[in-house]
Length: 463
Image (cartoon, rainbow, N blue to C red; front, side, top):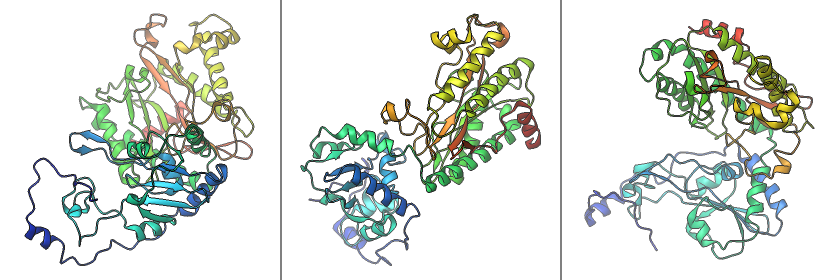
């Protein structure tokens, strides 16, 4: 059965003569020459590990489908991270199947042949003339180094574990099993420790992110004069992300003044007051879909005010204490607790809280001013491995090869009457990406300054 074409409401009809004419006279049927992607051998090892974890079972991992943004306009496609991890492929609607034998088959929607049908020039979602070429079966097999078959040949109805909630068509065609949740957890947990190739991709994303932060500082004179200066800087960083990677790894947070007290401020529609701080939380996503996640808070004037420096230095000291805890065998939660102990001591020194540090840690009263945890795993997702079981992630211990962020912050709300007026509306976060090594941790984002004196010198050199 031929699938209906995805044509627009104002699509022009095609005569028989035009259809016949469109099927002939093309220089070549194939696309450009392709070669195996560098990820291919690493993906093969991951598929083997997955098959070994569930021996004798059929496993179904979809890429996901296109999502409508508005009417007949789709969002730019990004595959599910588990699918990307296991294949390195990035086309929509494809499905990876690992058979009970352990053999893997990638079911793909190949490029429509030009000598038959009208998809290649009429289908607005999948047609080559509308969306660009997809690999054919032979090209896909070469690119991903795995057996490939047409998606229409995917067998339904056989028992399988399925990564659910990714592709509604797959969910409907493959019976739900009791082991689906276990598969989802393992697909997340197997990414907790990064291999050498992944660490390299993450480092590239972090390096590009550092260059994007430099771009932002250089653009401050123009942005400060714009009524939507935050959005101006968002665009500056977005340009670097598209030039050096796939896109941003998440919506950039460009928060000036009291906007920095909103943890996920992504409206980015505010003006820039030269007397305020700017909190920039942004990351480049590499072409291989690994994302950096870095935050810097810096004075728009280039120099910290006395109260701004007071708040910044407390967060800096908290982050420094947190980083010092990172090593194999340390509990994942240790770095957050170390940071929060420093925050509690600082809040007591400021006279904001009266209880002992131990009491504050127990009651959590300090959280009025800091709100959230101090870091997370990083990788294909900005909050990577989120479906892992608590006992192997949040309540687990660190291992060599894990990559994580450390990002304590202070968020002193502009309407908080427990604060002296001069502190209200100040938000500070410092976030860095680190990889756990054999004897500690390596700061992947060391190209960007952390200490307030270094931040001022860095800004001065870029102005």
